[in-house]
Length: 171
Image 1 (cartoon, helix red, strand yellow):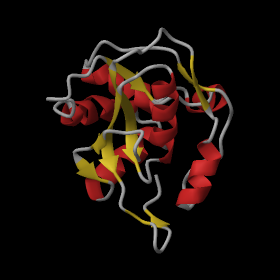
Image 2: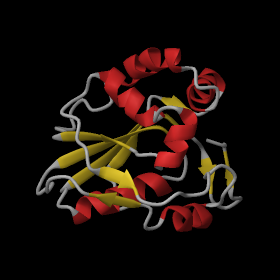
Image 3: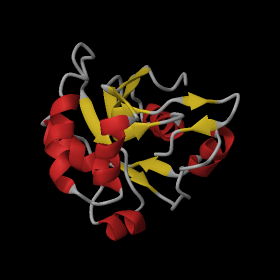
Image 4: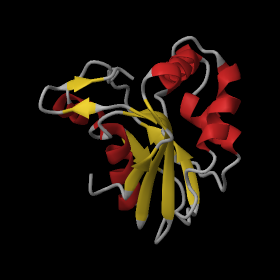
């Protein structure tokens, strides 16, 4: 994951954390977002982040869900400045149940950045959960192509992934 400086998440994707992610993402229970964001609050400490960006959903998925859970979490954290311009340019299959190679292939070329140049900036990508990092790595690649010097991944939860068995906790 050389595109990412690292991944920070306060929780493993199990137990109550998994319940909160699923409540937000699949049951559309937005009321859990403020509590999740409060628990994420210290994640960027010491990173000297210049810009925060939410991992985008494809417009059709966002329309179906009614919101982007990553953008909602980012808004609730109060982190800033919040950037715009990272977009998902094509619909991808859901990552749940896919192996690492499938996930990478699924998101390859799925993102573009059309905002102002990021020359020398440290950017933090925000998402609800990171499993293999395939989505975050692809977004980071796009942001580095736009000039970002460093890209960090910040998420509410991080799922255990065992590439030798291709076993992942569903996100």
